[in-house]
Image (cartoon, rainbow, N blue to C red; front, side):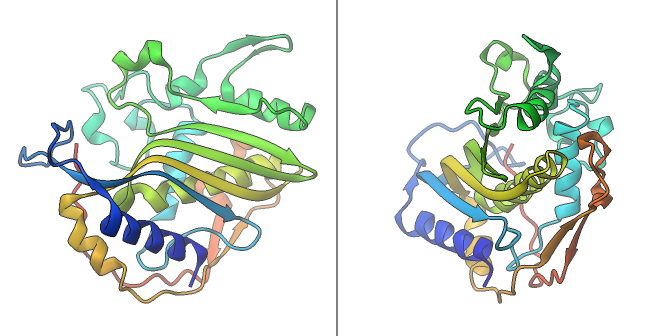
Length: 276
């Protein structure tokens, strides 16, 4: 059993057995047919992934990790808020006629701020501090910008990363306000594990722990039969993750800079409906 499988199963079992339903409350999300999309949830889940021990990808269902990396690069490297820069259709429902998702995600990371060292955006500030101020306790990003929320087609779910250098090890905390456990949990874990690897490699550091803090971890009503089936799937050992060692520039990574060896997820063909 991989650690990612173990944590996912424990989280989902806890939510299903001990979670709180929101069926007595008005909710924003809707299913495609217009029905309110209710959830059962747990508050304040915290998971720790040691990236030196294994890469945290599920084996009880395939995570399309290359597509997840592509979205990560769209946000953190291209700093884009336009789906025409993304090689997938996962954001189509939130885009306007021009392809924009508003002042969200990559848009916020691209905004430059004034520092004593000069103007930098949030990503370049992290890169600068990891190299020049590794003892700093201020290395973080935050894309939950209140003054721009009214111009975001979707408020950020994963909104903040805090980086910490301990010796030559790079650790990070991912803060997430809301998590669709079936559709997005491992997707986000994989993405931000890869991001830690990226920042570590270009800064001469070793990837350490990724701590994932979820405020509202939920399972949608129509996802419950799929999750119950998933929890019975046969598990496999975690695959080996590798990064092209020749890449030393954060902006030179591509989706082909990463590889997984021995990834053998269990067959899983259920279609997952997405609440909007």
